[in-house]
Image (cartoon, rainbow, N blue to C red; front, side, top):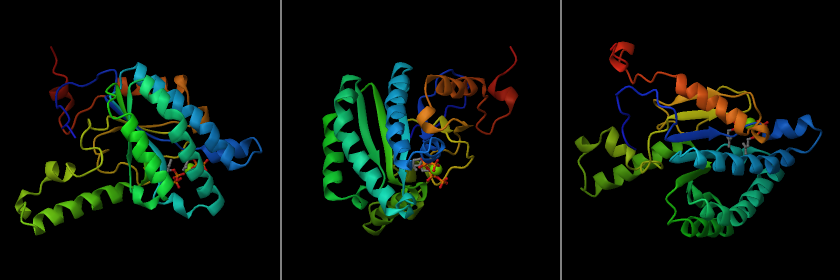
Length: 250
Ligand code: IPE
Ligand code: IPE
Ligand code: MG
């Protein structure tokens, strides 16, 4: 992850946006439909937001699709989410390629069945050459898992004598986390009205600007995204400095 630049940054567009796509179930329930209909409707929002971020030249978009805790939902809902994920991966790859978007799945993919794992590898390979934007889909992902995974890798290296314990610092640990190849998360959006992180990008959101939207994910479109971007553009990111240091008076 590139370190934040401690210069005046009230730039208009975030380089990296992460979104907790919440509210699918409530959206469906409000219409007297089964929760699954909300997840289906949510796919449209994903397509839309990917296109909008690509247009706005966002470098990375990270979407929370399935948390490590979501396995504890009713079996029927989990099954359906897996099926939906499998179908969407196959169906959307063409469009991603057309829009020059590289797909990356972050999370413990070993938790998925073999068919889904194969599909993930295929979709990543199919878009590997795309350079316009990276779309990270967090699936069977947990922020704590991400840090533990990095700690394990560092421990292995230390036990093999490849690194000394004293070599371990923030930059080295970061290298083994799942978004290490991309810019810092500038803007973290959560839809659906709740104001919590729910074990999403814990390490990576240390200095993210947070935006909580009441819009349920299936209704999240251009206007709602623009609202978040406008709020971001008005924030002064200080990274520990004083306001005067960040924006010195001319
Ligand atoms: C987010 O929507 C999608 C997933 C967690 C897979 P929810 O399914 O959590 O929707 P609500 O919060 O119950 O409305
Ligand atoms: C977070 O939403 C996970 C995803 C959006 C995939 P949840 O609906 O699972 O979060 P909680 O349970 O409200 O914290
Ligand atoms: Mg929810």
